[in-house]
Each structure stands twice: as structure tokens, then as C-alpha cells.
Length: 73
Image (tube, rainbow, N blue to C red; front, top):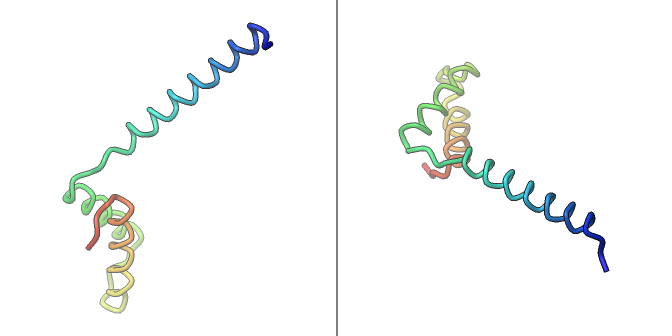
């Protein structure tokens, strides 16, 4: 039989994991399409992916970023 201390420790650990999971889920709310695109575009501009020679690279990175936010181009 488990001691009261072991049971209490187990319950505390399970509760802590539950709180951490809820906090993580709350911080990853889905952005609207416009918000996600604005965020992705600003990241690409920050990375200086703008020349006409890198259009394909910009498209691929933009699509990848949008995919991370749950949207497909």
C-alpha cells in the first residue's frame, strides 16, 4: 500500500501537469487569417526576403509560416 506522502506527491504532480497543459493550450489560440498573415509577413520582412530573385523562397516561407498557424495557401 502506498503511503499518504506518495499519494499526495502523485496528485500534486498530476495537477501541475494539468495546469501546464492548460496554460500551453491557452497561449496557442488560433489567429485569424489576417493576423497570421501579418505576423508571417513581418517575419519575412525582418529576415529581408524581398528581392525578385527570392520570390519562390518568400512564397515557400510564407506558406510554411501560415501552415504553422493552421492555414493553407
